[in-house]
Length: 396
Image: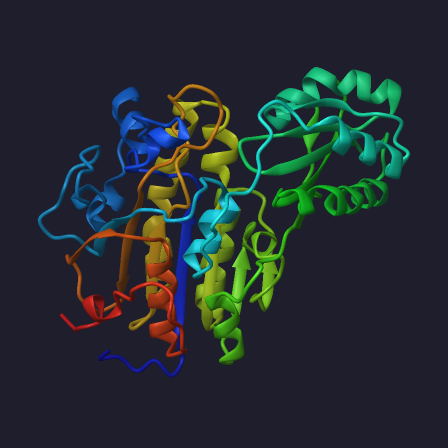
């Protein structure tokens, strides 16, 4: 039972993309035994610190010793174990909202098979593709950009996520054509178990190409209802910041705001908290896309510290009675082998502003407990996951 007037409810759900905190019990099944994103960053980077996250209770989470515990945590703390058989962005975010998958999306660590590529080439008339392998986007456009400019053939590549990505220079392939090719690819690959097709336009001259903000995701919609749908049906706004709107293909979303980087995402989030009611659902992707996949622990550490510096601004934007939860969707240990995501526990720092703090929420058996708590907070019916709202709403 809450002790707050929630007639104008606002909730923040903030996902720090790939900020895992240690191998999950089934990590070995995913080839990720020993992975620990934040732990290994703390071991590798001298003087690494996140004092504001420590003050919330990040270092108090069970079995997580990379940061120092505090005697007076400013939030409630715990960790979550993913149930769904995957370690990709879509699977993690869908599970947050109560949609658990029985089968993982397909990934293609050796590139896409001939039948997919041949159908794509035939239906687009692009004359062929370059690449067709897992690779960092910035690396592959530097590697193949010259050939792309001379042949006009798109650069097709994948990653640890179940995605089909198409990169093209805007002077060679205009945006409208690139988007049309992505729509064709969507029809080909999504029925084969891939979650997203991504347009990756770039500009400039070799070797100094720059990817533009005209990236566009063509995502498989959730196959069933999520708690976001229930919130919208209940008259609540759901504002998607960053790639959240694409992950859910607009389903259960009332407004989508694109972001350029983590700092811009934080700026937009603060603005929405100051000016909107309902759920503000943010993904900060730089940790994953710029540093995890590129195995750059120094850059990852810097991004975490930059976020930590801005954390007080975010929390100050919350009003009395507002809910917040900070977590992650998977790991991506920048010290680990390969460039894949890593199967890890994710942190949970949560609370109601003005409510109970310092409560150990333990290990949650599923990401869907966050969605259940959001449903409880907004007083909508939902039966997936276990709400922890009662643990965090008693006034201090």
